Length: 377
Ligand code: PLP
Picture 1 (cartoon, rainbow, N blue to C red):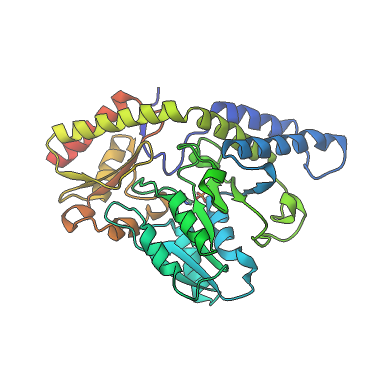
Picture 2 (picture 1 turned 180 degrees about the horizontal axis):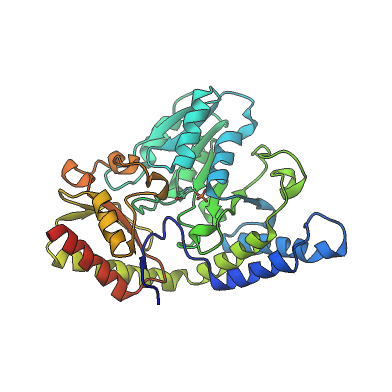
């Protein structure tokens, strides 16, 4: 039993015990460099191959479409910086609620004149509009050197986007489609072939895998090599593979994917308890977003301070967030809360409670009770 309540699973999750046990053997026993030709490298080499196959299988991809990276940030950077082989003036159409791994990369590429960026505007529940995408791509200058990058689900408010529809439109206009699925992989069912996406970013620590490892799904060969050096990752991303983390990621993803249905029902039950208890306490708040990722509950309380709530809950050993982990040091209202136009009376009082499968009903009731106590007195 913990003496704390961890409810910030969108920031990171606890490492799965089976993933950890598997990782240990690749750190302590089978630690050979998977690229070496001798027999000691056989086991890690095989583990790498099997992990790639397992991960591909979890998202409906082929093994040679999976490239291991250091996580979501690197995968997003790769997609934005290296699509279409940088021959012509390139265009990116993204949204105003993307993670900073996409937004700041776009800003830099655009500042350095490597591409021109347009932003789709999320509506008041964080949904991206298909007609707006159609209208932008309908402008003459957009060609096959255009990348559309829209996140699968938003990390701050949990809104799941209509990716299949957006991707279909992008392809009608011969654009390439990337989705940052960092928050969604392992939590909702994803089949890349059914979605039709060209590139997809994922990060293991969001689905009970280790930190510092992730992957990039790439269909076809339209991404330029990212790191230069050795011939690892089919010559697309040089650097000695972290076999232990890769294997841990595969174990964690398989377990989470197999439990999606069960976990979704469980998390929706916890969400309902949380919201009902907060309402019964008479608190004035809005739940942000729509079509939510299981467990992601973004709440904006009237005339409150999210910052103050975070610190008061911290004193009770309850860990939540005011927005995304990367915005944690930033005191201003997050770009997502601004983009969806949360009314002034509520915006500053925004917190994100992201529940995970380890949370219990008692914990959720305690979170609601403590919030009510803080806000009522
Ligand atoms: N994209 C989204 C939507 C995220 O939520 C995050 C992390 O919070 C990232 C990208 C960055 O992932 P990583 O921490 O693996 O670099």
